[in-house]
Amino acid sequence: MIRRRAVLGFGLTAGAFGLGAFGLGAPGLATRQAVAQASRRMTVLLGAPSGSRLDQMTRAIIPFLTRQAAADSFVLRNIPGSGGLDCLMALAEAPASGATIGWVSTPTLPARMVDRGGTALMDRLDLLGAVLREPIAFVSPAAAPLESVQDVIRRAAEDADAFPLGTPPPGSPPHLAALRLQAVAQTRLNIVTFPSAAAARHAVAAGNVSAAALGLSDVIGLLRDGRLHGIGLASRNRFGMLPDMPVLQEAGVPLAASIRRGLGAPTGLPAPLAERLVQVMRAMVKDQEYRRHADESGFVPTWIEGASWRRVAEAERADLAALWRTDPWLPSSSG
Image (cartoon, rainbow, N blue to C red; front, side):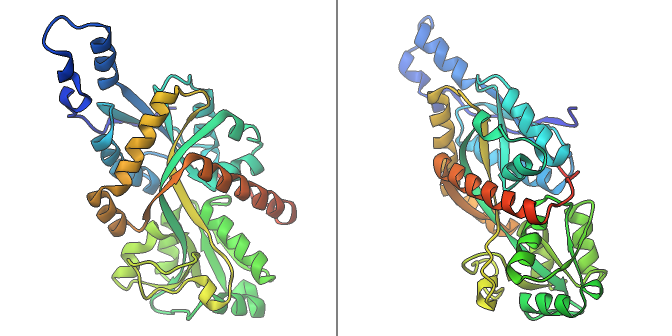
């Protein structure tokens, strides 16, 4: 079901595509092809409801793609449902003409291959490249701050029921990070899932849960204004945007968990178009305005080329399959 459709970027001129080289005479085949390319309009599928945090984030990023793109416009089409699987299946089934591409997230893609039977997705999709990395943040209420993630582990070991750890829906990246923390700590955590990241954020800010695992973009504002306390980032290194927030490895917990987002397409996308989209994304990551937006929004502008991103996704799939065998999570209803 199409929930929302909006044209998110226009304004590229013919000169941007080198059309002046064809002169002012009657348009030849090369000119017509160039014009067709210049006026290309791509639909970007997004597996999240209109108005959700991921929808808002994606709509804020699309104009940076448009600035660099050979296409006049990108049109965002929301296909929520089945924890993102409905969108991924729609992308896999789309014609590989370039008219339809997708905004893809990992570990969402490999998770849906494990918990909802989308086993063939990796063979039907090409990951073109990721343009951002967002670490999972563990946070506690400002009124009752925890010192480190070891406090979460210790208190859960003492009385898990009295120490709830909130997350977004089962199978979401923060929930999967909480399950992995549980496995690393070798203790049971009282993981309480909420219908959305917004609901989990509200619960921890209000002190209704003792701690929460959320994407950094969901909590960056509350961390900066002191309404939440940062326990630790599931990352190997500290972040310049939050230099005082420790990483989990500093507390002796070897857990790194990040969300990577970028463009994907049905397999068989024409090579020239795929390469052009790669060039667009690479240029966007270098865009200083995009980098400032990333710093404000709680993610890191990082270029990961498609083959490397695919290897990351395959490794996540193997890890999640092992986790599913020992500690299966409930199917996610989140987009």
